[in-house]
Image (cartoon, rainbow, N blue to C red; front, side):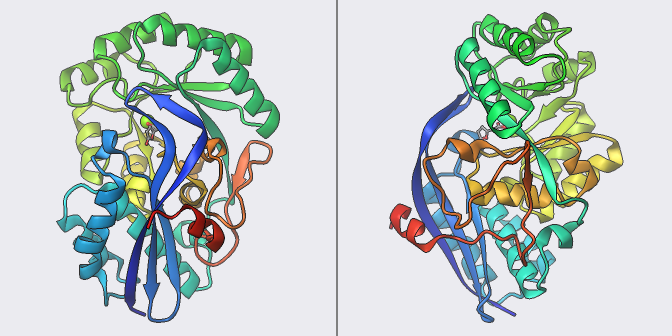
Length: 366
Ligand code: MUC
Ligand code: MG
């Protein structure tokens, strides 16, 4: 089997409910659909979310790097030769979501070629993941109303609160209101997307003590090495690295230097191959992981649950799998469903992200 052609298709689908957070805001999913075609007729599919404020990628840069840099080097390779592919992708620095999507599309091809679901090929631990819902910047009362609505409608009982605002009292108040309104058993954790300094994060931890928050993600820039280390040392909950941990090398550096004590894995930026290596590293070191969301579409969320459900350590915590609910539409032919707070993998060969051709036609940009 040989890679014959690679398509990078830009498309745009508006959000019904835009998400605002410390590093940016999404109002339209201006993503790129990656399709890898082989000489056997099997095609692999994956989605890339450009995040200029996180990785420096844009919709245009993803299309360009796939067409001009990666495709010429990958054409003719056997999708099963995953290490050769990885070596080629690694030769170009950055561009994590372009690389991640190419890797996922190749796993999709391998699954179809072997008539096996990819979650089974990866590890086959379970067939679903509990869902965590992300709450963007809003007044505290609206945040609670949204959380209660998601609990009632979808059975979701884990919430990640976007924080990193100033004055700190905005987020501190939101934590108190959510805990009071949701009760003691609901999991609540924070993600500041580097919005604070380490000292500000320390103050937030002090002023939310006793609320039973379970994790604090990217409180400040990981480049502020001493501050991050001090925070990790003083925090009783994991300080989770997300955008500071784009590669396996980043993860090992941050864990060994003490800048993070938890790891957010995102298949959108790590694909399945590097995500598996990151997961193994974390298991060996005894570090908790969370399956994060790059504000993914249904195509991206299906990739996350495919990977997350495949291993015990990645399926232990609820995965962030609900951002697609805020979009007006999606490319997936058969919509994802959240039932009783969980999403299931697809028991079909490959990843199972069948694209609706009419929707792709409607939303594609070229
Ligand atoms: C997160 O966990 O930081 C914010 C931007 C993005 O692409 O993903 C997020 C969620
Ligand atoms: Mg994050």
